[in-house]
Length: 312
Image 1 (cartoon, helix red, strand yellow):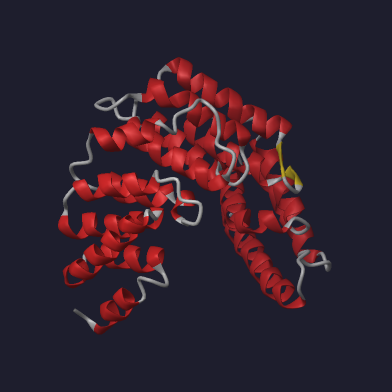
Image 2 (image 1 turned 45 degrees about the horizontal axis):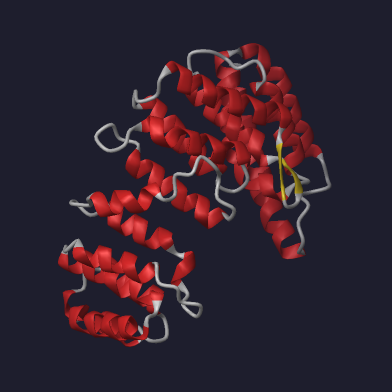
C-alpha cells in the first residue's frame, strides 16, 4: 500500500469521514482489512460513523451490501455520532455504483416530500435523490418535479444547482409542456419579485433564475434580461455575494449585445461608468478589497474589449 494511503488509513480513528472517503475514492485494496476492522468496531459501538468505512468498502469491493450496511449505520439513533448530517456522502457514492438497486431508490424516496428541506445540505441531498429517481425507468419525473420546483422557489444557496438540474431535465425531453410552464412561472417570479435569505434581499437569485430562463427559452430574447443583468452588474461592487457572478453576467450581456446591437451602447456605458468609479468593491478586509477589485476591474475591462469588437 502506498505510504500516503498507509498514513490515511492510520488516521481513520481521528478522521473517520475524510480518511474513509479518500481510501474509497482511491479504491485502495490494501486498506480493505483495516476498513473492515474499523467498520466492525464502530458497528459494535452502535456508532452511525460506521457509514463511512462501509461506503469505502463498497467502493473498493464493488459489493452493494456494504452500501446497505452504510444505510443501516446512518439510520442509527446515535446522539454522539457525526454521520447524521452527511447522508449526501452515501447518496453520491451509491448513485455511482453500477448496480444500485431498490434499496438505494427507497432511500432516495424518503427525501421526496414536495417541500424544500430546512438546511442547505439537506436540500443538496434532495437534489441527489431527484436526479436518481427522475429517469423514466425508475420513478419518472412526475414524482420528483414538485419537490424540485419547491427547492427552486425557496432559492438561496441551492438555487444554482436546482435550476441547472431542472434545465437539464427539460433539455432531455422528459418535461411535459405543463411541467415546463410551472418551472418558467417560478423562475419569472424570482426575476420579478426576488427572494430573501438570512441577509435580506438575495441579489444573486434573479441572476441565476434569468440564466435558467435563457437556457430554457434560447430561441427568444427575454424582455427583462437586459435590465436584470445590468442591475446586478451595478450592484455587484456593493454586494460581495454578486462578485463571483460578474464574469457570467458579463458573458450574458455580451450575448445580448451580439444578438441585438441596439443594446451595445447601454451595456458599454454601464461598464465604462463602473470602471471609472473610484469606490472599488465593498468587502471586509483591505487585502480582499485589493484582490477582488483587481479581478472585478479586469473582468469588466475584458468585457469592454469584447464589446468593442462587436461594433467594428
